[in-house]
Length: 383
Image 1 (tube, rainbow, N blue to C red):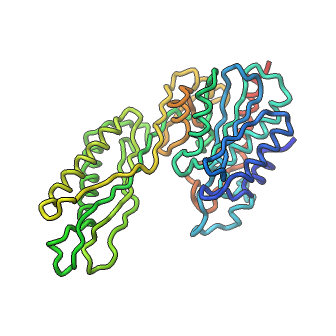
Image 2 (image 1 turned 180 degrees about the vertical axis):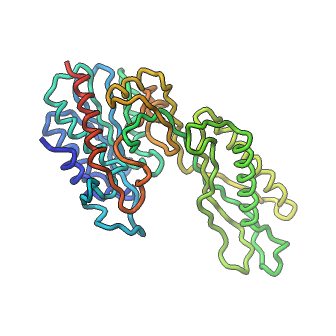
Image 3 (image 1 turned 60 degrees about the vertical axis):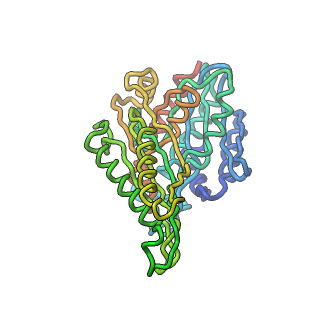
């Protein structure tokens, strides 16, 4: 029988950065599961370069438990690693490599559990859902969910194995990402007042976004269970202008809204777009086509599972814990809830604090805890 560590060693060696294909990794997983007699299905991206994997162990016509993980990782360029990020390295009880915590450690434990489950007669199925492009907005899993929502039986529960130090997490914020583009009127910089500076327009809107953020922080909804207790607005990228002596006619910036599950994110979007129209109208005395345009970049819904739900009690029975938490980063759990009506709990090995950084790692003890949780899952679902 293969250990979780052996699987993790193999998985880390696949440099499945979101910009690249994950098909080699998926082939490894599919070949292993197929060798155990486990049924698998691939759902490819539109261009065929990537794929989700769905596998079922146990009966088909019964609501089962989904173990969900993403196969993509973030890049390593510009990071000072102490060892090869795509070669698993052991040091002082920790295993280093890109994706060890986020979240190939969980997938490795799932593969070990699948081998155990394949020898049992399950009365309730275990499903494995391994997706692509989670790191760029939970993109890949949507194609899989579009197929699953047509199935006559929906999953009973989804456990998303993002790194939570094996604590049951019941909620996370949702996210909307946009690109705002300001359109002004170019002019020679010596005649700047006859033009409309698109960078100024964008800066005005960024100022308005900051004012909206300040109002939300002061007067908006709050939830003290989050590290940041309110909905946040953030501008992360800006680009405009060609050379210094031309009044720029175009400027764009990317911004996001990370909203509490109980907040109304569309009200915030409306506030921003209303501010944009007010700003643009102030420039139309000079240029009647001054305007902003908005492009959707990415989004995923918030997740919010009641702490007293059967789903949370079920996960607590697996982990032996009784605490719950909330996280500020996003997962695919909200999409399982929204698309399938399947409650989700986030629980997996590792610490999010080391994810996306050089020398990302997961501890031996965390992998062992995850193995024990999944062993209990197999026992609980066995006839």
